[in-house]
Length: 369
Ligand SMILES: *[C@@H]1O[C@H](CO)[C@@H](O)[C@H](O)[C@H]1NC(C)=O
Ligand SMILES: *[C@@H]1O[C@H](CO)[C@@H](O)[C@H](O)[C@H]1NC(C)=O
Ligand SMILES: *[C@@H]1O[C@H](CO)[C@@H](O)[C@H](O)[C@H]1NC(C)=O
Ligand SMILES: *[C@@H]1O[C@H](CO)[C@@H](O)[C@H](O)[C@H]1NC(C)=O
Image 1 (cartoon, rainbow, N blue to C red):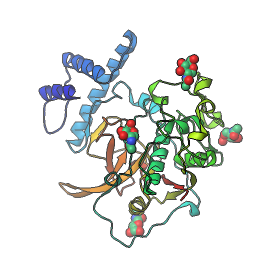
Image 2 (cartoon, rainbow, N blue to C red):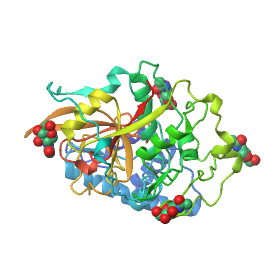
Image 3 (cartoon, rainbow, N blue to C red):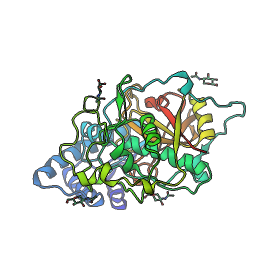
Image 4 (cartoon, rainbow, N blue to C red):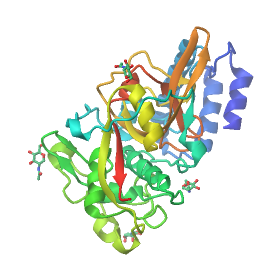
């Protein structure tokens, strides 16, 4: 990263926002450095295609940085060799509308005390380290497990990492009336994943059942119950010895960790802030198509359909920032794209405006006391 930054500052036309160079020599040098930084290895044909995409992305990032004039910043990252549609297909989930739950599912929170200006569960050690899902659609399992890690720590247990891979491999929960299903590397829903963990009776730790789906280290078969109609065709190739049935070990479930239910929170972002403070880190979803190259600032894209969700993440806090025109409220959100992305793996998104649907699928597991 340091070397990429050096090259930018050396060559950029600096108007308070980042601009990558646009002449061929510098672009080639930047591409070479970027490949080293992110350990990208391509064969000849792939390399040509990837370089073409890289250049298009740089052009796009320069435009975004100019548009936002230093308030929100975008930069090259591990996704610089993916076109927006490749990013959508591999890393995000297919666009989906949020289910609406029955009324008794929604938790209510006391709102008599005023909300503080800022709040963050990271300060209270309720959030584990940032993970990297890799180039597969497993965000929903990271979001689910992040919420459960928080719920566990809120009960006074030591904060620890739980298995995301178990959920990816084993959860084929479907909700036919709602037309929703959990589909492993092809996406899923936290509200269904809580139900899987409840039925299964527990979760292993991250160390006992490690993540391998997103880093090419395993070829996992579809979970039992995988619904082809709702999920699409399953992975074309998998190894039986790497399936859920081969790997899950009930004797390694974290002792005492049981999901007994789950709750949702209304779309009102004031209620969500109270709910966050009362409950712990919350699973949320959003339309993340514009998030590919985000680096800093409050994420607030001009066009972002809030009804088309494609990414699940974890809400951990909120705050308010001074701007030229007053103040702007934002949420702090934990992502699963590694710790180099955004603010050490986190992003800020505008609060109180239904931005990208961030308020439309707020849920939490309930654990056994
Ligand atoms: C959990 O995993 C992360 C990422 O590998 C690591 O940084 C962290 O130390 C682990 N433990 C906790 C409690 O976050
Ligand atoms: C899969 O989903 C379809 C569409 O919702 C539904 O009609 C079908 O019953 C489901 N299949 C199974 C095996 O549950
Ligand atoms: C499954 O089998 C393959 C090929 O025999 C092997 O490379 C892989 O390490 C095995 N995976 C596990 C989890 O044992
Ligand atoms: C959200 O709830 C608060 C307090 O309960 C209320 O004052 C506010 O008007 C609501 N906001 C919206 C957008 O409905």
